[in-house]
Picture 1 (spheres, helix red, strand yellow):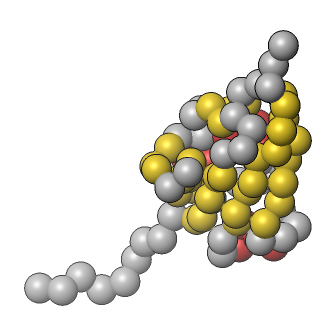
Picture 2 (cartoon, rainbow, N blue to C red; picture 1 turned 45 degrees about the horizontal axis):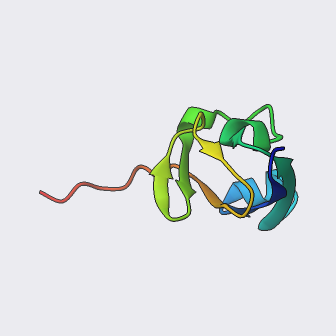
Length: 82
């Protein structure tokens, strides 16, 4: 039998607005892909920074109950120092 429980999502930047809050809990059974937890079709998953329990991950990475997933937009731009 698969273990069931909650995955905590921490959403930063514009993602909090798009997904309805800075923190969410998602009930899952077994493992799920991070991409399956992001319910926003207009977001380019490859443009996100994803951390699972503080470690870098890709949208295809699997999470399990009790994991914490932090998702933030990729930050770029600014002036380069010479």
